[in-house]
Image (tube, rainbow, N blue to C red; front, side, top):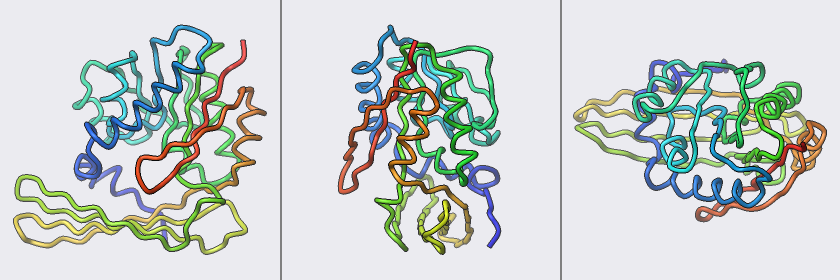
Length: 245
């Protein structure tokens, strides 16, 4: 099955319905902010959100930082700008982009999951390192690792707004546990005033053991601190990484 990117192009208008920025994302951003303040060895006023998507994390983080967002999707950046008109956004690939400036903190959230091979994974963290001031903090959160992956896990989220009823059905599956990839398939059940439309997405994602995360971060030049984030039933590993200087 070929990869698609409907959520980040023609279906980007659905993104505001999938997870509430003011509640679900705010909780995570408070955790990120606390880690930055805990580990930073310099004043922290600026933050780069790499893979910012539709800007939901930016909406919360801009209360504490002067935030710049980077994302590959023009459609998602348009949403991020609408949600955060006072913030700067740049279209770029997390593997290769160089903005020509550095920041006191960097966030790499779930977009790192799209690095589906080790070469891309390493390149993304080199981008983060290149944009971080000495003594600054990178916060990175794996969606899944080899240790936490649950085969064939399916989750369902529903939302209603202005005559629109949407159900997001997300399934993850690893057809070959010996490689560095797994598959995410999303089914969108879209009812516009009761009329049903069905769309699908399929993404190839990267999956690595925790030790690979630790090793890559250390070899990139970070002092690595590891903790846990538990927003509910799930628990995630969170890395707070200091750039030496």
